[in-house]
Amino acid sequence: MRREVAITKNVAALHTAFNNLKVANQSIPKMGLVHGYTGSGKTCAIEELSRDCNAVFVRANSLWTPRNMLSTIMRELGVAPMNRSDLMFEYVTENLAIDNRPLFIDEVNYLVDDSRKMVMLDLLRDIHDLSQVPVLLIGHQGTERRVVMRPQLLRRLSQIVEFKALDVEDTSILAETICECEVAPEILKRLNQEAEGNAGLITLGLGTLEAFAVANSLNKIEVNQWAKRPFGFIKKK
Image 1 (cartoon, rainbow, N blue to C red):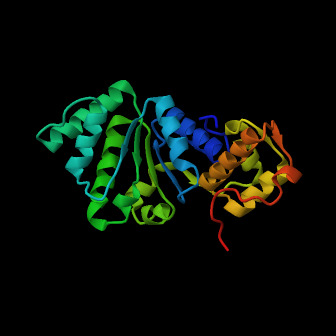
Image 2 (image 1 turned 180 degrees about the vertical axis):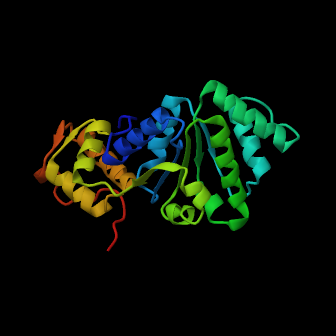
């Protein structure tokens, strides 16, 4: 399997949204939200985008406090955290602005699901306002419903991307990108149906197909060769 990110509709929408954030003028907020269910391919796409744009990429967790968040961002900037949160806040905003580095916050659902942690969303809003760099929030499905309850944050989200289930065309693009053998369209259609568009399960299925091709010295797997073999994951009834 090739370790590449396929340009599915979800990934193309992510790239378009981020490019819009980068080129937005000062009158347009540069905050964005990416949300979607587990298995939609969101994590891989975000990680690749983060590498490509040299973003400061951190993951929230259930133990985060404002100080934890600032300390984590400081470490990603390559410096040791300071004793005072106000000094860390000043350092983060200034250095993000100087280096023009975007800030990505993954697992932001930890912040929106707990009203006691909402202050960190306000802190991220302040970082965005002062640094004027793109700030991308990434969360699970349902995160967007909680963000709507924070009007001060919502009005700064100029780009919102939802990672949806892959369709058959996306499955074909994924197969062409990562699979080192050709797979008949009818097989890919069945794979998409059984995986219910879940990118993670589709990837597992493509791995099973590729292993079958290698074991049988095949460059292409036809329908009659694969028949009704399972794809290597448990499908829903």
